Length: 324
Image (cartoon, rainbow, N blue to C red; front, side):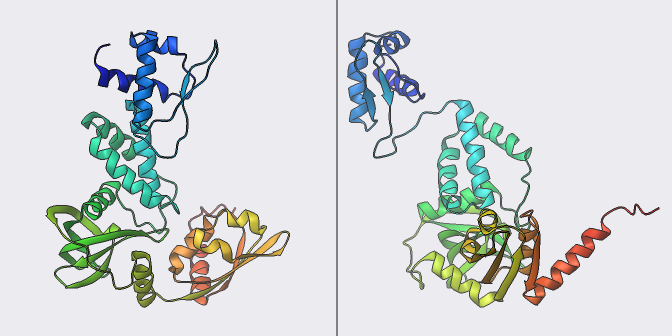
């Protein structure tokens, strides 16, 4: 193989397989001399790939963890698997992973060949997640479109449906995407309203980056997370959540949303109490508690007690009447 760039890519692809490659085997695979392999290994090291060499009769080369993340080479199956996994991470708003999933997905889908994008789409459309929070679904295509506009600092057009059903067209300067754990929001400067706004991403339709660049304005709150929290505090009612679980705290903590984990206090070895000030909707809280698959008793707030009572009656009526 006389094409040096192509040979380096093939060599890198082999080394990214988690095993140690003897130099003679690499030379045979690539149809070159062991000396050429040694020179190519040095080239990869110069490019930032940490290739480790071991001496001896059974020595060889392997790629190890370095101080930075170099580019990866993926075959078709690996690329599809990663894209599907990133879509799942983005769609479920996993704490600490969701924003990185969106950024990585935007990069990967930009370079995926059409045939692989089609395979990813088929897999995604054939898969239904077990839970989707309060039922507000967000498509990965919408998330990646918004993420791309945020990263490129491009003005964005989209349709938006307000909570009362009113539909409008918006032109904004997108600032950041924010995940609250069960919903996605876009923080942006609305050029039509001449003010900062937050938009629920599940209510955004047909997002289109205009190509017009902008210089980001200074956000009043300093950062998007603080700004989002302040806006939510204005529009949501706060509740004093008081729930008792028939399970130890360590078992419950692993099933709670991250923002509620610190509030789970042991009552005794077999029970724990969850007391926290929350702004989540009672509907979402009731659903989230039910899906934990742990027996619980709601002591407050009263709106949550009433909704759980209503929900339990509805579920009981959903069962077939087997009497007699």
